[in-house]
Image (cartoon, rainbow, N blue to C red; front, side, top):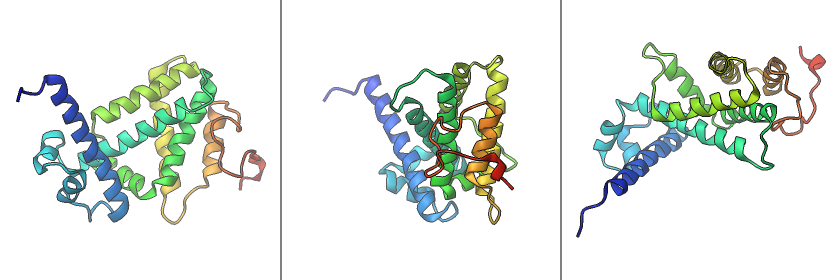
Length: 208
């Protein structure tokens, strides 16, 4: 049997990494972070235990990469959905709604992720985070930002703040109010993007 080519080996490594990331998302949502072990993750992924150490420095790094991958996938899907558009305001609205919607749909996962990046070790750079950053920055460029780098950093901070506000135990802020504040900041029409179900219109005067 002839040896596998470098491209085949690279594709196999990519798939192994993605299986580990997907397994992490599934298990943390099912069991919580503390109850999920690296052995559980490798078993769910059908991967060798040593692959985790090869790709990631530990469980926290694996979690952050897994969440960044999920965020990138959700954002890419939202931006590319039909009807296709090149309108910068519509794309930014879709981006905001994608992150807010993911936070609501994956509460346990996102709460764990936010707690992780607020620890002393902080934010971990990884290929998945870089893909997410490039896509979000590109959205800001298409929106027409004068300084895309500065605007990207601000948008990232605003989305992180909105995520924390949605996840705050015992006192979460309403999705509609957070969305309204973000849309006001960027002068976006409420009907743009994907308004919350049953809230195709929003009256800011109703806010308390």
